[in-house]
Image: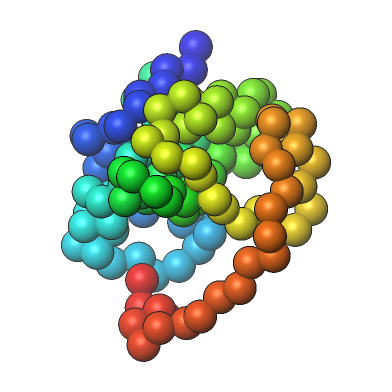
Length: 131
C-alpha cells in the first residue's frame, strides 16, 4: 500500500537524486539538491521505504506558488499516484499553484481538475545549466 507524506522534511537528497535520475537523468549535485529540497514543500509517495513519486511546491506563502516537478517512477505510473500527489498539493498548498506541463500530458492534468492557463516562457540564468 502506498504511503504519502506531505511536507516531507526527511526526504533524503541522495535518495531523491537516485529517484530523479530514473526519470530525468542528470548530474545532480547532492548539496544543491539538499538545499533545493529544504526550500520546497515535498509531497512524497512511498512503497514501503522506496520513493515511488514526488511533487514539489515552491511558494512565497502569500501570492504565488509553483509545482516545480511531479515525478512518478515508470513502474508505478497509471496507479493513481500522480493524481493523489496533485490532490494533496491542492489541499495543502498555501497559494494558487502554477506549473508547466510536459507536452502530451495535458489530458492527465485536465482530468485532475487543473485548468489550462497562459502560455509559459523560460529565461535561462547564468547558473541554469548547473544542477
